[in-house]
Length: 158
Length: 158
DNA sequence: CACAATGGTTAAGAACATGTACTATATGTG
DNA sequence: CACATATAGTACATGTTCTTAACCATTGTG
Image (cartoon, rainbow over all chains, first blue to last red; front, side, top):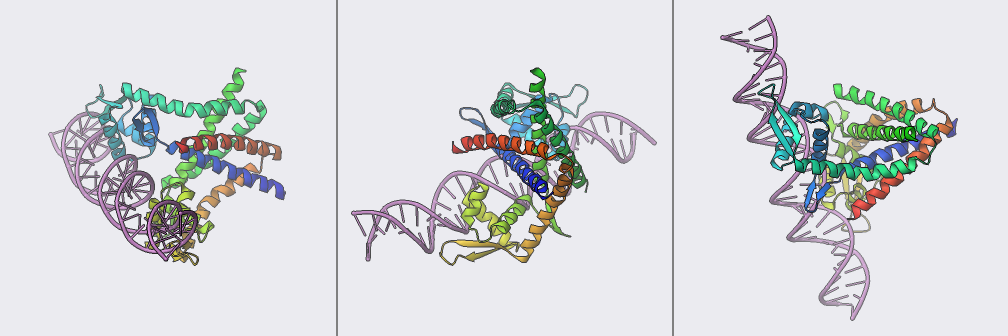
């Protein structure tokens, strides 16, 4: 079964290639509008807050798997740049609730659109494949992500 | 064809999930041996030099898509840490040829093994699928990487 | 109430990137 | 040949993002 092994290996190679390209695309700064760009991290923070309004700084930090300190600094910067709002939580005097300003939503949408174009193209292309083929892809990805998740947890624990 | 669209969307979502997990795994530092770790960037530089011995600083920089300056700094650091060797090129007095020291090869192997475990597991799991299923995955990945490559080139040109 | 846990901040510094300005070497053209 | 220009590489200042460690304020619990 040599050829099957070879096929699998080259497929894994392709997968890694795609993953690498994805992270390179993710690294590009996002243009909010003429003269205003946002770094990747900023965009991701904005995206996360947009999708989970009222989350706290600590929640944000555990979401990204970074320290509270790092999250706090990021939030401070984004508040200063007028993308984020930090309000005292109603139920506690030590927690804050994060939300997006108008400018924040603008950046949120810019980021969404940035990926949206690729998504549309992908959708269009994948549509030419059969349902069962796509289902197969889905199952395989499921399998792969299962393995990765396992490894990730293993390493993070230590 | 609503359900097909939904299937495609959730598959794309899985793909992104895998890509994200991959980059998170890639971000973990590599342990060369007890008491000696290597950052991701260092590991990648070592890997690249190991796979392309005698490459120059400029080649390294264009390989990673970073500036010559950044590559030079990385090389300087790795030479100082005794992972890399920088020799005058025989055909030119302005170029250098990079290669790995013994310690460099140790780190190279550590990094390879780090991924090797995942690869083995993946190989084992994918082996349970049929050749035609894997071939489908391969074709789809091909398609996806084509789209990504296009986008990447578009954005990088500007 | 005292004290530990929790939420958050600040300061110092490491890793990695960029931009700019610079040196030294190579090369092509009048 | 001489000069302009291109190429290889480095140094330095600066920016982003992260960690660690020390810290304050609030809150929950024995």
